[in-house]
Image 1 (tube, helix red, strand yellow):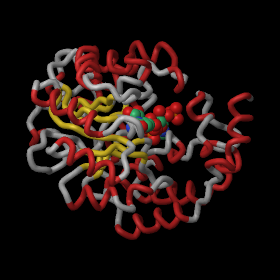
Image 2: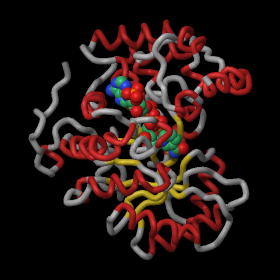
Image 3: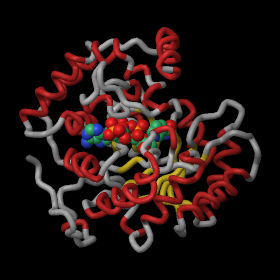
Length: 342
Ligand SMILES: NC(=O)c1ccc[n+]([C@@H]2O[C@H](COP(=O)([O-])OP(=O)(O)OC[C@H]3O[C@@H](n4cnc5c(N)ncnc54)[C@H](OP(=O)(O)O)[C@@H]3O)[C@@H](O)[C@H]2O)c1
């Protein structure tokens, strides 16, 4: 089994005593843990985790993450309509310096000045002096990057934010954003997991060649890669009912992939979810931000940062993922709608 600090022990804050957590090694960049924490789940109804989670477990997860050397914590103004930012901010009281706080602006209107206003509002909900990474949540076709980046530049110059990032951007728009800002756009947060490997086409090579970062969201494909779900045991919250991966046919088709994940996991005395995260972390310049429904999951995910897969295992997992052909997109819509109604 992989080693962890015993519960309750709070490690000293220097890099040398931070245990085995791994951090990015990039120029002009503070301590960004390669294994982070996603907080969409905090106070968001669509995950269906309920009041106890939002009121107490979420904070416990944040505290344990910090104890274990996690610095990267991701939220967004859109999560729970600001609730996630508030819950995170409260949990960070007294420990703000231990975190690299990332949040996101959702560009809905092409209005000058909105980025600045929303950035300050996020900072205030988080209760911190400065947001470490402020990301544009989605590329909006009617909101040009010149408008967005003018706002980002103003926020940087005023010290409201440190780094600028984007999310769900293709490579062309990432570069357009950088040109508009005239400074680096440090990261692009995109869906990336064993079953969503699109970023490998051009985003990941770009990041690796230019000291940029790919922040992998849904790195466990919303828990699909934990292998704990099957046709007779499916997650209940609406966000996953709307995800075609959790349709019975796709869960059935995933059996060989799940078997490979379990097999590799057993060789390391680890769990399939840890293997799925370690597979992503095998790639340089990738940060993963799994969400967690319990402190225990968070602990298991942190352990994944120190799980080294062999090259053969990386290839074996990729082959198993490539042999999995889920029904997605338009073909899955009727079944997803039935699922949401059922
Ligand atoms: N930029 C964007 O557009 C965007 C989009 C989506 C997400 N995100 C960010 O990315 C973060 C992570 O993505 P995500 O939450 O969609 O998906 P994820 O991290 O792939 O999956 C999270 C879920 O997986 C399960 N899980 C986590 N650790 C586990 C473990 N060790 N063993 C077994 N199950 C485990 C938990 O659900 P159960 O226990 O209930 O199964 C948990 O809620 C979000 O919180 C958010 O910050 C960003």
